Structure formats: structure tokens, C-alpha cells
Length: 72
Image 1 (spheres, one colour):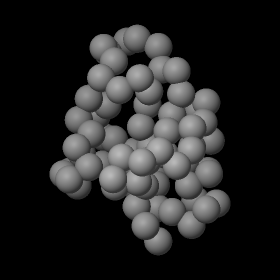
Image 2 (cartoon, one colour):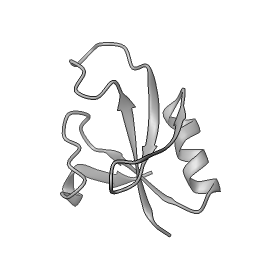
Image 3 (spheres, one colour):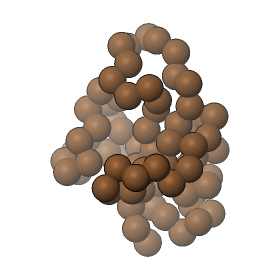
């Protein structure tokens, strides 16, 4: 079961600004799917056999650092 990362868009947005959508990305930053809510993105990932991870803190999302992610 490969890891995928659920990230809010736009990336690098200031805290408190609007989130447009959520993307499911693989470890190489390739977007697999875009959904309007985080819940929908997590559900899609699980349905398709992935292990979804979400950022512990939104602005800390380095995929190479496992401390920045938690299982969804």
C-alpha cells in the first residue's frame, strides 16, 4: 500500500486564507486526483488502495520528513 499525501491548495498560502481544493499526490509530487474537501481526498485514496497522509502543520509539508505527516 503506497503512501500518498493530501495537500491543501494553493500551496504556500498564508494562514487564514481560503483553501481552493485538496490534491492527492504521490512521493514524486505527481497529482493523482483533486477533490473539493479533505475528507473526499482521503476517501478516494483509501478506495484506490493508498495509505493517505496529511500534514501535521499546513506549512510544514516536506515529504522527506516523516515527522511532518500523520496517517489519516
